[in-house]
Length: 442
Ligand SMILES: Cc1ncc(COP(=O)(O)O)c(C=O)c1O
Image (spheres, rainbow, N blue to C red):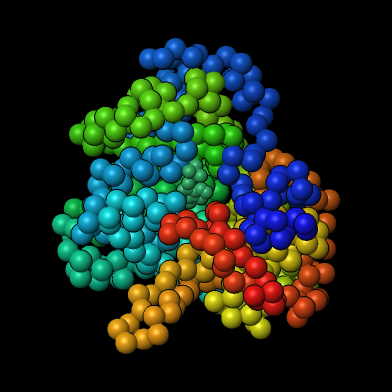
């Protein structure tokens, strides 16, 4: 049976050995440095109080300035803990854009997630410097509508992964902080890609060109009460994450839950060696030569695609190139998942694995109205994107040239691509395991 058919037209179900260039995610797929591997060899595996924990804690503090660092095995474990404690029915969490696992953890607690992305962020092909910004006016309005007492946290995702890897400006973080202070709502940062965001601020925001990325990161975190982090991104680790915060009472509650679900407070679901890798990776990512190479390589692929007329998110984001599948495949309606159809076409053409960030990932079903035929209607996502996430320190320019050639080939024969229908799905995070088939086969 052909690989795609066997995988139910879902790239998550394809075996990695059947993939030539893997751009499914930049999460946990980085090449660790020789220093990180050396740190791994020196990991202290003591159950409690290991020296690796204290290296990790010092590294987190140096960047965030937050005194309380709680290790977790991934970013979503940090989310599970904080949203279990602060969430629940009747609560609202407001963000620029919540990542899929973040939203899922909020909803799993019974609470609701609200995305308030700025207007520029909603138009993939129109460039603007900070398309990850939150709409501050909408934030005020939503707080008044829902009641500050029902909003346990505002969360800014930097860079905004689900919104095209676009950065958030320091000014926007400051403005959101001001509103949060006014209404006494804690502000958290989803910090997975903090260094990439800080570097964009250095490049694009007035007054930051002469500041180091560390100084910029320090300032970002100074406006926040806490953060969640997946160390699988900007810490170059293959596994790991953390929660960091200033409020001791909240940290005690988080640690209690950590002990039940992850592990003791000084290892939280990780081995000592993983803590070493994170401690070292968090410092390596501040290297501005690396960040220049990183941001420039994403821009290189983006510009090649723009030159060939391929509709992509502009300007280039921090960790990935995003193709606007709605424009790429205008003949496929959103309920036939144009993004997923493009994911399959890229795999078929060149063995490139990518991911849909559109209505397969974020679409919901509207509850059928009384007296209707009972058929569920898809409420589509805001955008239909295909993300090509570039693992850190892994691929060379030749790999990227090959990727662009494949995309351009597929673009030239885009009219031959057909839509997909879902044949199997789960109620939450369905994109990971769903099965689909081409509409022509249904
Ligand atoms: C913005 C953002 N938040 C949270 C997460 C969750 O992190 P993890 O995969 O480590 O659970 C991710 C992962 O891709 C992410 O991109």
